[in-house]
Image (cartoon, rainbow, N blue to C red; front, side, top):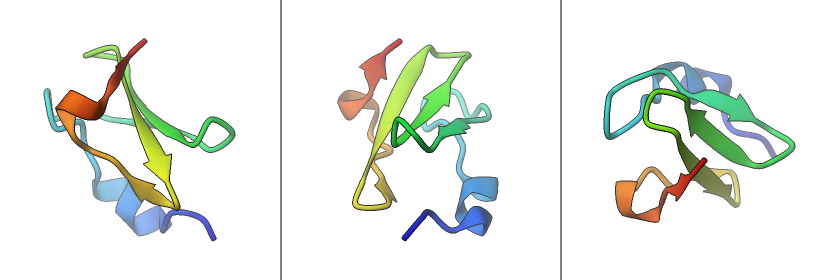
Length: 55
């Protein structure tokens, strides 16, 4: 099962409200403005700033 494309359209970075790049092979969402990587676990994005990884 993959993330719903409609969900991906409305998700934004919780820190800067910028666009996110979906990297399906990495199971992650990337914010290039903040240089943060939000992981996806069991098809659920973990959109917590404290849980994000620096790029």
